[in-house]
Length: 220
Image (cartoon, rainbow, N blue to C red; front, side, top):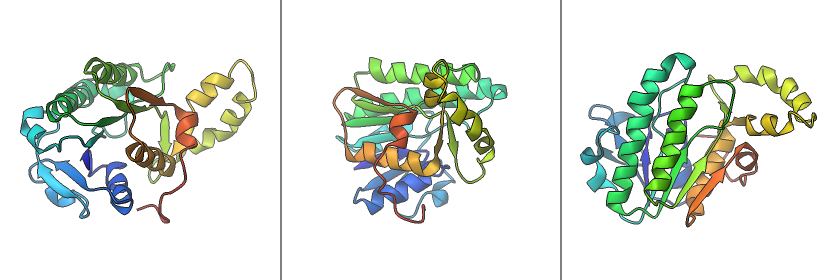
């Protein structure tokens, strides 16, 4: 069983469909009034992702908890929103996961260190520390930028990445801060659900790119 926050979002709705296709039962968290946006393949529960008490009793015991709540289209101008939404929601998710004694927690963080997006990186790094401090078995994914519908402009940077990956002094940063596709993210997330871990596993960009290619065609 999987409990999914952010199920109505860019990655969440696609992940929900893929997980059900793989045989998982998915419970999606939705705000009051937004339940009709939840994927039809999910069981939907009403709650506030910023308030653990509003949904923690709906989290199935021994499930995998996937947390995908966050500010859309992150930018340096949204530092206050990262604190109010991203950080508060991961605090609530960790509290709810501990309350329910979940088996496995999955969190999308961000590649770091990096020369930009310091406020976003700081909040996501704090989210990682909350997971570790809670003693949860977890998979943490660290993409930098996810290419997909409405998010294609960084593809113009691919020639620069190609050059940097062949320069010894820049190779590590270019790989760590590389681009991944939406399909690769869904594949990596679904594979993490399929293969829970004991302890904490971190998937950087190279590992995300190597996730087994099992997503149905076309991507939902």
